[in-house]
Length: 125
Image (cartoon, rainbow, N blue to C red):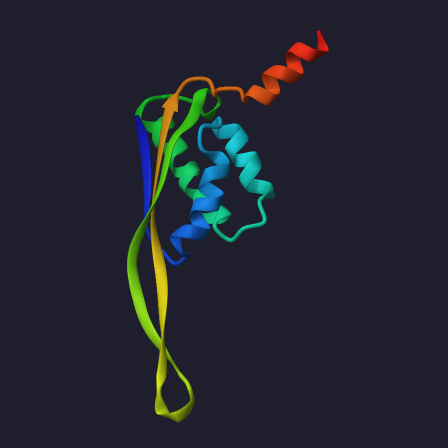
């Protein structure tokens, strides 16, 4: 199992999970293609993290990116920075600036094809 992690990313976990769900279970090559076209801010740190995990695989286990899949990608909540916004009559509203911990686990293997792809392939025959 090849892992890479990123701690205290200044993006809220619920926003990172949207991008993480798009690439979970895909091959590394497909995941990088998806992240290249995603219109989310969280795509950049996840893309860099996958590059780091691929570098770990090639350096430590001599495995190329073609034979790897994203087995697990986990997004946990990091610390919350507490700020406040001044409002009328001398009061303040609290603001929670959330951070994320991201863990990527790669495994050698072939990505599973979705049922839609299998149905299309059998319908063409």
